[in-house]
Picture 1 (spheres, rainbow, N blue to C red):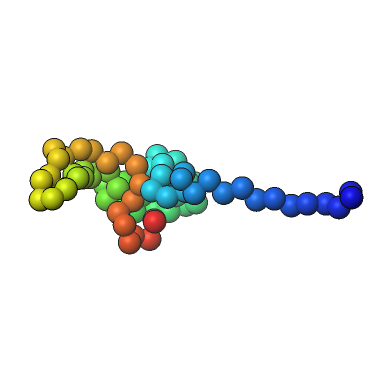
Picture 2: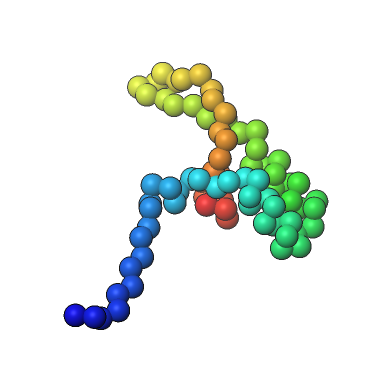
Amino acid sequence: NNCPVATIFVDFKQAFDQLWWDGCLGKLQRLGIPLAYVFWIETWLKGRSGFIEINGKRSAPFPILRGAPKGSCFT
């Protein structure tokens, strides 16, 4: 009936725990955040690992290559 329609699509699967570190750090630099803080954030994000535990048995540790620690200001 020729009425305008606005639609928003949200891909929730991609929305959570997908923080792209290099993109985020580059954006912080472009915003003028001092490099010392950017380097601190980079150190805090990178070098983390995780494991899966089921019924008391743990998997081998694996590197975490994206995302941020749960409960942090970046999540």
